[in-house]
Image (cartoon, rainbow, N blue to C red; front, side):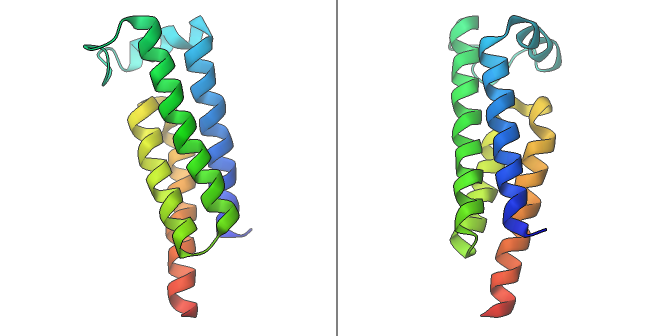
Length: 116
């Protein structure tokens, strides 16, 4: 399995989980239980907070997918940045996609450093 495919798989999972949190009330409840205050809980009311979280997770997921498609050193860095955004956005529920993108990003950067 290519290292860049980890970023694509993690990005797809991050986008799906982000949209699920933003648009389905049951997962929104679970998110509020696991992460009660949230990064944006002080500044936004509850529905807007979950839409912003979905947006941040989706941006991180898109960065992971684009980084996986590029597959070079720059793509690896995009996957690492995307994994950090996913962790910021959906925290506990985004651990698996974030780890996938982080592993793919680190392996892609290392692979390209060894070839250069």
